[in-house]
Image (tube, rainbow, N blue to C red):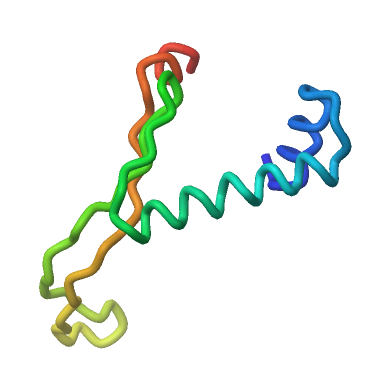
Length: 89
């Protein structure tokens, strides 16, 4: 499902215009991004949890040359599905 298809589904489900559904989706995404930037968890009961995971620095290999490279430590977004979502699938 694309973002446009999700907006259409939201608009028809909530009986609102696509423009308002688009704004609502953007506000939701901005809220999640803002919370993750502050390293806060976003929990939607029954759906899942968005959080920030920390990866340690590690060594890797360039697949083309085989040369060893250093991969720096970084923070990555993580999503864990909730019980209701797992059961629905």
